[in-house]
Length: 533
View 1: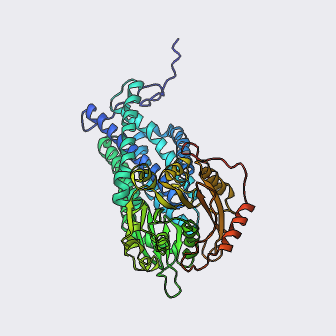
View 2 (view 1 turned 90 degrees about the vertical axis):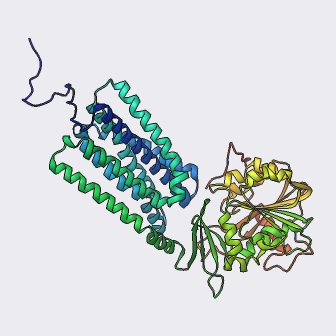
View 3 (view 1 turned 135 degrees about the horizontal axis):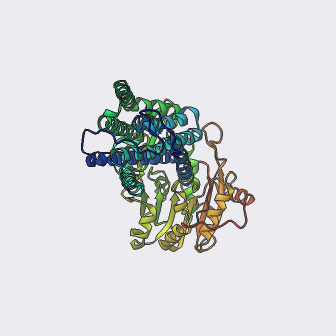
């Protein structure tokens, strides 16, 4: 007895193979074009991921956490998207076109939306998670739909189809991963680069469906999809045209109306506000973080530089300090013969040598004949040219906080081991190690790490005058003075007149730092970084 369930005339049973679509090209070429779409979509998807990671790191720091949040959320959401795409596979072409149009808007506009949340609301974590989930769901929906389209072009065994699709997907991810840092970011920036990626995404999905699978669509459907794709492209183009205006408005929301210089270099974004005159302090922001304020910097740089100068100081090495402010304090000592400044960002050096506000503040120290400027990574320089140079009497590490993006590398045991190799037997090393009272764990981890390479340390802290009124979250600046023998903490009798630093103030700062001591702090290495944000 036949137990087959009858179906209505013209209906298709669930187990019956789907009828191949009528294509305007031979099936082999049609299949190739679908794989090209897979390639393009994968490239765009990875660009969206990298763009979210890069922008989140730029806005909030801590690249490990940001990358972990974005990638884990996206991978999870891709699984959800794949499940959600099971139902609309019967209308795979239309569904794929809709997914690509929505993905282009969400992914292309994610950078601008994330930046707006940070600029006007002061936080972006919720937006980061939301966009990671939304983009992941849409990317996950692509794979089942594209697999259905491939099988409709020319049916083949499932294993072969999966192999072809994922090969195109992985190669596309490679191209997108390389295009983001080497093409999109330097040529277009994060905002325009994301919008351009969205436009490519829209065109790829629209062309594939509206041309290759057009015979599968009704007239109204074709016109609706065409109108939707044109609207998406117009929206992305409008966003690209308004990027400059948007960035200026966002900068004013973050930095106030006195933005004077805003440049995006190869390393970071640099913003200068104020002029240092008429009650408007000159401030430098690097990647959105306040790095220097003219009404506070003298107190900081005196505390950083002068304790290390209470000894031999013929040859001085400054790691960081491309603004010339640490070099200014060093050059106030007549016994200094040479100062080597190793700065990663050439834009900081350019501003330190040419910006009227900065040159007035640093007393044109970078133009002094005794100063030698080196553009490059401090770690790499110490491994290379630094080893071949004459040893230094003083090493000043004027570097970012240990909890920030580049911090673990520049506060690792290996880094201090390289520094010790370029120090004379009587040399002194001084460094900023982060706030003592707010982040004692990080500060004493730096102390333990410096001592692990055989140096003796003298910790001290200086109260931060900007705790109230300038948006600072640190109650102090914490410093470490280190040498081969226990260094005496004081000021040279040959020191120039100072604004606020005194010998008694240093001794008091040393006692205050000791009050916050955390015994048993771990040593930080490149393999096991110990610093937390």
